[in-house]
Every structure is written in C-alpha cells, then in structure tokens.
Image (cartoon, rainbow, N blue to C red; front, side, top):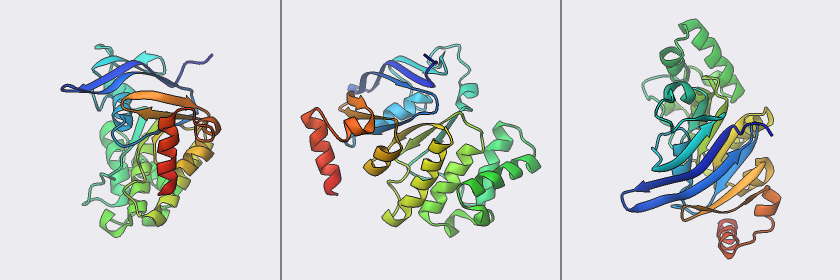
Length: 246
C-alpha cells in the first residue's frame, strides 16, 4: 500500500465553542481525485483549509506524503510549495497582467529568474487555454478566465497536489464549463486533487472517491457511482434531491 498523498487522522477544528470538524479520518491516494460534497456549513472548506494549515487544526493530524505537518518542527513553507490552492474568489492582483500574476510567486517564493518565470507562466497559461490573454489585466477577463489564470498561477509552482475550494461557484453558469474542463484535464494527467464542489456531474465523471460531509462529520464516502448513485443515508438522499432540483 503506497503512502497516501494526504491523510487526515482525527482532524478537529473549532471556532470558539462551535466545533466545525468533529474527528475526520480521510486518506487521499496519489493521483486520485477526491470530491467533497455537502450542504453549506458542513465543514468542507474548513477541512480543505486545514490540509495546508490556512486554518490551524484544533486537534488531530494532517500528513502530506507521510509528513505530519501539524508537528511543531515541520517546515510548513516547504510542504506548502507542493500544495496548490484555488479559491472561490480569484484573488488576482488587479494591477498585474495575467502573466504578471502567474510569474510573481515563482520569482518571490521559488526564486526563479524573470526569464524562467515568464517561460513557465506562458506554458501554464497555454495549458489552461489562455495563451493569448497573457497581457490582459483581470478587469479585461471574464470570471471564468480569471479563475483559469488563478489555476495557472497555482500550477506554475509545480505542485504535487491541488486543492479546489468551490472554484466554480462564483462564476456565471456558462463560464463554469471552461474551468471544469481544465480541472478534468489535470485529473487525466494524474494530478492529486481534493475538490470542494456542488457540481455533481463533475464529481460523477472525474472523482475516484466522493466524500459526503454533514455537520462536521463524514457521513458517507466511496466511489461516485456508490455515493451518488446509491445513497445509504436519508441525509445524503435529501441533499442529492435538493442539488438535482437546482
């Protein structure tokens, strides 16, 4: 059995008296896509943010490639370089072009030369279908294009794994497809991905494993055809009915 790319053991997170994650155990195999589904407030985004310690877990352990990143001696910055993250909001710098947004962290964090950073940036912009938008500013791009620049920015850092936090939920419906296509392509190339999503079609087609969360616990998990096609709990049945109505 190979070491999981990501492993959560008894993960807990509280905000004051509100316990948002109640002892989550989860393993993500290398090159697998795991989709986290569930109603708003079920703890999905908090779980994702604990994986790279954007949120500090209250208890339990997070292991990346077998390294416990919750250990006080862990070099968190080093581990974070292997984890790309794409948020619901694009978080692009408005005063920088697409190219500028994608080169900045490469130069600052990876200390790449300007020429190398630009070469990598053009490659990843091409990968997400935006080679011709390199000199455009965020205000000149659609929401879907901005989100693809954000994905390119994460890819430029050569991550071993990618976390997507509702990457399409801020987009107009007709722009969602382009972003999902890029995510689908990454999955086919063997990128390890954890995806918080409401896009059940994407989860059904692309996920190796679907995890349904409710009120801070994992209620059901398994292959998409099992979780989405044959839900075992009334809570998941109800959730899927609501999602499919919209």
